[in-house]
Length: 485
Length: 100
Image (cartoon, rainbow over the protein chains, first blue to last red):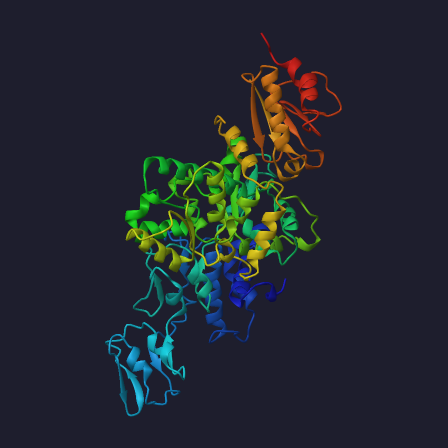
């Protein structure tokens, strides 16, 4: 396995730690986990940090996260104390490029009057500056830069601040665990906790699926992740890890669509101005709960596709254990929520899956193809922004519900914009698809790769589904839940 | 009450699980045994090469034909499709149901 298979060096380092932890979980040596940093960074020269000792201390933080992180902290996202490089955060800074021009458009656009021209040079009064960035945009020489910490910049809910020790700190009451900071930190100093050791224990104790069966529910975004072989080969690899079977989360999405359309229909019967948001993105749901509590009742009561797929499995096999595999950080907390009724037993990221497969010496490219086909076209395109909006409009139309006006809110900024309009009763839409990640789940933070082409892979995958419509999934659901047709 | 589980794992699904389920529903109704049989789905019965498979739990196979494989609590039917559901039901399952 080579570094180039990941988008960044941060992922590569995280992967190497995970792979070693998993390898030792099977082959022994985990009790001496403190030797992992030395195994990964043998030295004597440090690659990125000031010295090899610092580098190993950072790696030890990563080992800790790979083994589950701080159990006292309920957040699935944590700052790695040693890894946080205390980046400068000087705010708006005028560089030497400033020529002290006559136009000084910087001064003109500043809404706070924070800019004066002193000695032929732009000067910013930090007590007045609100770091809006307008001056930086206006300067024809690009002489003004915003020096912000990447983590703080990435956090759309302003949950990250700088603490007394100059380290990044996450405010759990604001954090929605979307994982944007995990992706953005150039030092890899913010990370998700891994549950992979719990999963290994679950697999081992199943005694090759004889005591109970362990199912993997896999997110549709997997199709965009297959740099290491086809999705159908990845399915074989997952089974070789010891899972009984792999089921598409998208079959749950089919049913979520059906339930959301049905719920919307009920709302239409009750109210002249029905309003509903989706509930499948746990980071979005938390975003609404934290920031738009007055809109909480608009959130759909339907469980997420992950939970629905698991629920189908557990109805047919009550002793089953279900592990969700996906690109999402927020699913790592969603599965613990009361409303999911313990349907999901654990969550693994795509990054962790790759480390797991490699740690077990499985070459995905050499695996035979397994079939992966449970869900319909519509369930599969849930993975991209706009997929649910498209699906619900179709399903509602089939149910004879007129007047669904869906909007796809792509990323937290768009979610905020549309929900503010909704709160002000100025929204033109009435069905709000909310996804915290840009592009939808295909842009999930724990993906192996986040490429703009991912969305095409999802479209292709959607088109390959045997079921073109959700009817088959819905009939299966009704039969399983003993609902009358 | 016996449980009939139709496999809906990926492989069986591609071979037509949903059609088998619909046909099975029709057959159960036709033979008026809907109250005696709990029709369910299962995500993989572990016989992917011989799909569609149907697990019949709590019942003995009446004829033990070629498509029958015995299990601890009953039997599994292999290579089931919408065309042979009724015949398999009539020969293997129906005679073993405890009908009053």
